[in-house]
Amino acid sequence: MRSEVGIMSRRGFIVAGATAGTASAAALLLPGRTSGLAALGRIDGVADVRLKPAPAAAPLMGSGKPDVQVWAYNGQVPGPEIRVRQGDRLRVVVDNGLDEETTIHWHGVRVPNAMDGVPHLTQDPIRPGGKFTYEFVLKDAGTYWYHPHHRSFEQVGRGLYAPLIVEEHQPIQVDRDVTWVLDDWRMDSSGQISGGFGSRHDATMAGRVGNTVTVNGRPPQPLAVQSGERIRLRLINAANARIFGLNFGGHRPQIIAIDGQPVRPHEPNGPVVIGPAMRVDLILDAMGSPGNRVEITDDFYTGGLEYVLTDIVYSDVPLRKAPLSTPIQLPPNPLPKPQLRGAPRHELIFAGGMMGMMGGGGMMRGGMMGGGIMGGGGMMGWTVNGVSANGHDHEPMLTIQRGRTAVMNLRNETAWWHPIHVHGHSFRVISRNGKPTQHKEWQDTVLMPPQESAEIAFVADNPGDWMIHCHILEHQAAGMTAAFRVT
Ligand code: C2O
Ligand code: CU
Image 1 (cartoon, rainbow, N blue to C red):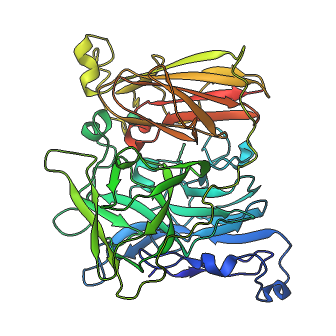
Image 2 (image 1 turned 90 degrees about the vertical axis):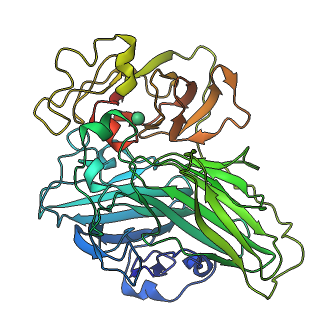
Image 3 (image 1 turned 90 degrees about the horizontal axis):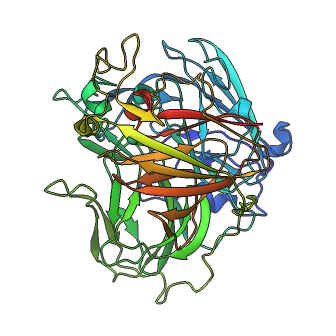
């Protein structure tokens, strides 16, 4: 079980972390329930949270096994699940207990630039022992998460990440609201996290894919259900590099949101594919028979790498005979609609990586492979429009006028998958490989298969300098990152 974190809002609730297979605190949060904590003198509409990133020990391998040395928010992996309601103001005081600098990035949340947590670009990094206060209003409902943006390939890789759930004013009706934060660790033979973060091998290939998958920081536990139950399953991929492709046996889950943003409910066309940093909200109507057991499998990586993530286990007592017939379409978020006509188009070409040198390009020649990303120059591996950027503080690659629609054609010219993330905005995926998408999904991270392209569009309504980068954290560190400016 994850421990509780005391988060109070005008609704005066205390939020508990969700655990695999058990209900989250959502049931406590339905409108109209209050518990009188307002008497504590909290300011209306503000949720106050204290987060302390620091070394800790966590039972990643299960309660029977020795604890694992991790870096964690408030001593737990994942860190505390922050649950607020759309329109709330969130205030978070970060108290850095690490031996190195850090920041927090509110992944997918449309925050003001100064709250985006990008070291050197939007704030000074928080020194060891230092404090920083983040404060912003949650404009959009949905499933988000937070993590450091400083040396994230190691800080996230050691356990610094947590869910941020923004509830709708009018939530859809479900029996349970369950958060699953998926992660993937590279453990060594002693049962501890192996070192070598940011190795050249990982950086130039698939990233640091591990050997141990956890759900909510534990070995995956079966999802206990009752026949007829409707579950909203919020999946968050917090892994540095692993992509998940989940199958739910005979179940027919409906995707209702991607990266927090509502989408017309639809069945996935194959497995539910979740790239690093992405979120998918599913409606799972558990319509198996009482006493049944159904496997949830992950077959994203094939050729013997498929595995059973966990089971859906039905109790003997059914809840109801037919699935709920109430609507599962989420209310839209207040996103400005891109106007495609006449919008400037920007080409972003992602290149490099291990096979990138086969083409005879100069990228890997002339010593650019030397040093490794931890070394002085750090320039190797990946490029955006021919530039392999180092760190966060670099000149914007393009400037967009505030309020204008920007169309970006992202082209993956590598032999690898890349989840490309845009800060400060949600975008619509309007086409893939030149073909219009069916759902015009709003996302903040688009997973790009090798040699494919995707066109995204958004209204640049959030002024400031913003990152666009690959969320395979080793790729980001090795140059697959750029900045754009909204003026
Ligand atoms: Cu989730 Cu730029 O990061
Ligand atoms: Cu990448």
